[in-house]
Image (tube, rainbow, N blue to C red; front, side, top):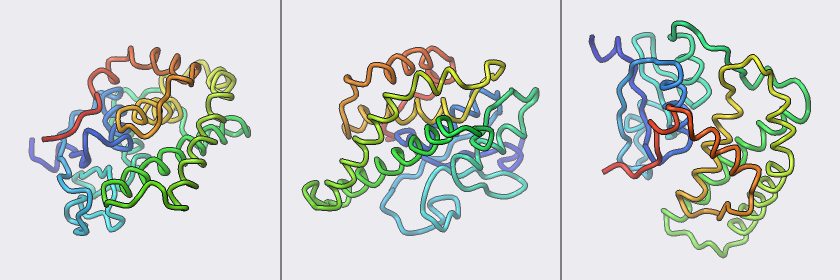
Length: 210
């Protein structure tokens, strides 16, 4: 099988957005290879699989290149057989579920900004950094308060949902990157403990690529 016949996920094992894609690949049983982006401060799009946004993950296939975790996850699902019953963001048509997904993704993006600013040597005491951290704390408090009701409202016949995957990746990544202690988020931690029992979760642990 040639490299283009076998999808290539481009990203980092320490990235929560990359883990979304890798979790979906594992859940769906899609054979693929993994290409590590070595320098997240690189400004060369080719280091990110050609993504002009200089972001990961990226999926390289014989049909072309897919940018971003949601695009990658959808394409992996389309390549899977049989296709699992996946609840996608557009299926969340009530405010609670839609807002749960939105704030999960916003929290993930905010965390990335905090991590990247730290990597670039920016101080954590700037006005912008303080606002980002306050925003993250607000979102985590909302997610903790609403997680039980939101997860219970997901369609029971699903095999997987994008919301569950992203929420798991967010909460577990906060401690991994020492961005925010999560011990106080009892509901979110309980959900993560349950989700972590899935083989796809144990197959895609966060780690720093060497």
